[in-house]
Every structure is written in C-alpha cells, then in structure tokens.
Length: 329
Image (cartoon, rainbow, N blue to C red; front, side):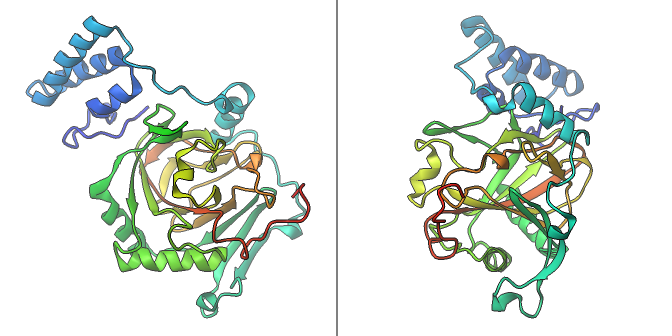
C-alpha cells in the first residue's frame, strides 16, 4: 500500500510514499510508524525530521504502548459480504449486467432545459436507473482540469471523514484534499455553472458545499461509504441546509490501473474516465438515504488519481426536485 507523503516530497526506492508524523498519530499505530521511520532513515540517515520522529515514537511506545487514543475503526459496511463485494468489484470481478433493458440506458445529448447547454449539449451516458447514475463525457477540458489541480495543490491536506459530531483521519480513506470557493478562479465559477446546468439544482451557498479536490496517490483509496449523512449528529448538518441530496464527481486525470468507483449494492463499477463527470442521487424522493449508493474509491494501482467532488444539499431544491407523494419513492 502507498501513502501520500509530506516529508519534503521524498520517496523511498521501493515506490512507497509516506505519511507525515501527524498522520501516523491520527491512525494510532505507533509501532508501525516507528518501523517505517527507521527504514526511511536507512535510505536518508541525515533527515533530521525523521530522526526526531524516531525519538518521539520510541518515547510514546515506552509511555503509552502501541496505541495512542482510540483510532476510528472501519464502518460495519466494509465487513463480511460487503467487503468481499468491494474487493471483487475493484478487481474487475463479480460485476453484473444492469437490470434495466438496454433501451433504457445508453448515450444522448442533454440540454436539461438549460439555455447554458443549448449550443453545446452535455454528452450524457446513463449507466443505471436504480440507483440513478449517469456519466457526462468531456465535462471539463484538459486546461480546466490542470487549473483545478494547480489551484488545489498548495492546500492539499490529509482527507478526513465525519464521525459522530467530529471529523477524523482514518485508515480506510487514504488521500489528500482541498476545498475551492467559486471565487478562487473563473474556471471554478464556470464549473459551478456547468454543474448547475446538468443537474438542474441550485448550487449557490449554502445549498452546496465548496468544490472538494482530492488526490489519490499510489495505493490511495476510500473504502465503502455513503456520501449522505446517516445520523442527524453528522457535521454535514452544521450547514443548516439539510442532507446531501446529490453528488457530482469529476475525474481530473487518467490512471494506468485501478481507481474505479465501485457501487457495492448496485454491483458494478465505473472506471476512471478523464475529464468526465459522474452524477448520482444520494437521497430518495421521500428524503431517505438511498442504500444502493454505497460506493468506494478503489485503490490506485498505477498512476495518480485526481477528482473534484461537488456535494449538493436538500435545501434550495424543493421546486427543482420536489418530494414524491408516494412515501415508497
């Protein structure tokens, strides 16, 4: 497994990339951190930062033992059959054909009733109807993707997940991320308008979160999870704009191997398609979370994966995606 590093950008010869000391403390595995730090010193004996880390870890082990605090454990959804399904999908095994008729799926040009798309309709590929998942090809240009990566690069930090009322670094999400406001650059603003056009939703604050840019290095992954909150205590509700109703995920790069987005219960995966945008609804029309959207970012086996996530919330969408009169919807 590879880890995104922050030790002066250095890499060990075997191709691993290391996390910094603060990340190992977040994971809580001190003895493993000490072992890796000592191995790093073998390749770079003069590295003062790693030398200090070795001394710190030795002291922590002597004082507290192997665990400092209680690291957040993997959620139950990654266990047993779900875990097996996740691994099979990431390996390209076990995926089934869509239950829908082929005539219900396929490609089309989409304007979504938006003047923004009249002259250049979106290239829409419908992948699934339940859950509703579509892929928009050529959603961004190469230049736009590079601009987004360049803007986010200096601000990347270890990704966290919501846990109860707080956020934590965890071993089942290995990536770095940064947040961009639409005022950061005209390219970001243009993407916001484009996403609003294809989704038909209101992306103005506070109805949507800032654009999250994520970098998955070698071995980077995010194990099975939901984008929507499954508890009212989730930090997502601090925005006071409801739950995450929908997700737009833009692939900003290609990868040589791995990195697919696997939908566990829907039993299929979407490979990385450079410059394409993946869209799905997180909530059903009755406001409940759609369990079929359980998904994962498969480990990157070769290459460098960049994505941009836009999470859209319930409030502000009342007339754009109205609730169904049928409580089963």
